[in-house]
Image (cartoon, rainbow, N blue to C red; front, side):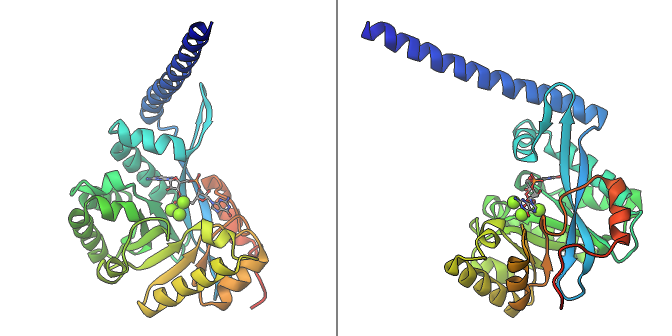
Length: 280
Ligand code: C2E
Ligand code: MG
Ligand code: MG
Ligand code: MG
């Protein structure tokens, strides 16, 4: 009887594995279809200037609603695209689309765009980005590229070269999810970054958790000392906003100001007064 039970447990795990592998294969297949049909599109989340109390840009965030599988989160399909060697094509497609969407905004509104560490391993990335800017006529000074700390761990030399190449054209570089990865303080100093984005996990706890407040204040002090712009991610309430603003954070992003929205909704938002702002 024990043996029979053991066998059924094994069978259960095998079925679980099969289901997982099958779902993964289904997503990969649909991902290829979506790339061909260009149905993965950027949505746009507002970036707000703390000093000016207005929207100064949008971050493009990939959204995929598959007819077969429903909504799939970028946290799921980006890693699969990376593993299947499709991230380069997907990234190009999204950037092209984002540059065209952003062309409808006034010239003072910038576009932030995420680049995965896998893309940054490729030394030709800089050229590909510049090509897309040229073909869409988008001003490099309005583009901000977001990279994560793991991109630096993977291959610092190539990453540094691509960063320098992009910065020479006026593109700004932001270090995303700061505080969760392995960037060293030395790298902050030597990498020629323009901005750091404080990860949502710290901002989350800014109301109430004293230690998170100390950490956030220290990051803001370090960044300003190094001449870096700071964005706080994931601001959800006025209390967090007030603390960040009081401690010199330059920019904010989060549900308090708005979630990522389809391109056609951005123009109306730009015309409305900012929601969620605190009196200066
Ligand atoms: P990220 O670049 O750090 O983007 C911020 C994430 O936080 C987004 O999740 C956004 O929807 C979410 N967020 C923003 N404000 C709030 C808030 O106030 N509360 C909460 N709970 N969440 C908030 P999303 O869109 O699911 O994207 C997840 C990650 O997937 C991104 O993190 C980025 O690393 C990656 N990603 C998304 N789009 C792309 C893309 O086009 N290319 C690449 N390479 N990666 C992408
Ligand atoms: Mg980002
Ligand atoms: Mg982030
Ligand atoms: Mg994140």
